Amino acid sequence: MKNVFLVENTLVKRDVTILRDKTTTPNEFRLALERVSHSIAIEISKSFSLEEFEVETPLEKTKGYRFDKQIVLVPVLRAGLSMVSSFLSMIPDAQVGHIGLQRDEKTLLPIDYYYKTPKNLDESITIVLDPMLATGGSAVASFNSLKQKGVGKCILACMIAAPEGIKKMNSAHPEIPIYTAALDRELNGNGYILPGLGDAGDRTFGTL
Ligand code: PRP
Ligand code: URA
Image 1 (cartoon, helix red, strand yellow):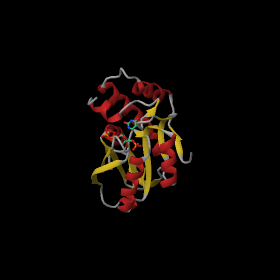
Image 2: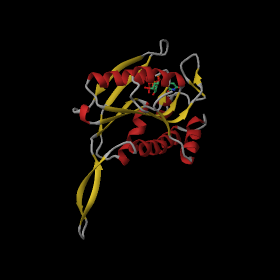
Image 3: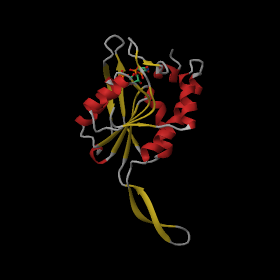
């Protein structure tokens, strides 16, 4: 496994447990997803470079810092939506695109139904948000679409990653770093992550 960053701290461990727990309500599930997303956003932001500029305090001028690139967030519908507000609270001037993908229950292949991203992706840092990296089909398809639009530096942010998905990403897009809050064991016969958390979209939106 290459280019994988495990985001681990005591809050994340506690919240991933809440996400896994089958008795967690959709509201508690969304809140835990948001808290973990904060930790992941902070971790990812350590890879951004800063440019210096002069800022004026009420007293005098001093050195200030800002990101040297525009940040673009791209949630994969539906489950990725619940990661957006946390990332935006840490990076308020980020732009937000959307990719709509639905995994076919039989073939497990992603079917795309929506794509909208900002212009100038080539000069930005694009972070794809999707809680689950299972077979990797959705993540690989997302980055394929983004690359067709000329995307520059890319990052994947997820909650739970399976070895199968990491392998697929490493082979299709080896340069893309994967930030995850948990590395799980394997997929079951239906393409669900074990131990996992079940269906992230259904648990987020209460559509079980
Ligand atoms: C889930 C999840 C990922 C995808 C991961 O979405 O949010 O997008 O499955 O699986 P993969 O790595 O095998 O492609 P799903 O297709 O269930 O859509 P939903 O979010 O609308 O429920
Ligand atoms: N999508 C999910 O929501 N959960 C899984 O375990 C696998 C794919």
